[in-house]
Image (cartoon, rainbow, N blue to C red; front, top):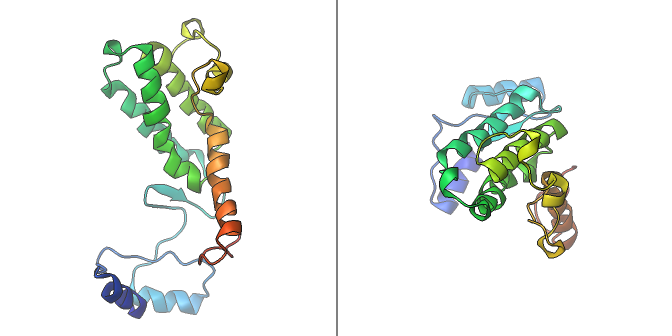
Amino acid sequence: MDILSLFGRASGLKTNMEKSSVLPIRCQEEDKHLIHTLLPLLEFPCKYLGVPLSLHKLTKAQVQPIIDRISDQVPGWKADLLTRAGRRILVQFVITSMLIYLCMAIDLPPWALKAIDKIRRGFLWKGRRDVKGGHCLVAWPKVTRPVELGVLGISQLQQLGWALRMRWLWLQKTEPDRPWVFFPY
């Protein structure tokens, strides 16, 4: 509580203790009991800032809301009024960018990446959530190649996730004075 109070005085922000809770990691039972007298305790798995957190591999039930949220965005856009170039821009810079925050923190399972690619592919070619095989004009692996090679240059989700998480390792090497540098990955 003193740390939160000091933070509040230093930053000018106030902590609302009514909305605060604690997620203890590697705490002994007596420490948990002491903390529980001050703030409510939560257990894993949980969500923090929209990112599902777990001590173990994420389950399908924890990842499915991410896919559903992306899928729910597609019908709101008037795809009939857009050209394929306009739909490409929405796929690359809106649907794909919805995942950047998540991919920086967690490794989405291959089945989830495949489901999101199906949504992106469907919107690109037909303006819908999903399409059947005959509507795709170019194979998806070719679509995700760089623009310099003469194709659309839509980001590959798996490689994008790797690059975002590798950034933490790069920052660990280039800026060793950051406080989180010694946390294990």
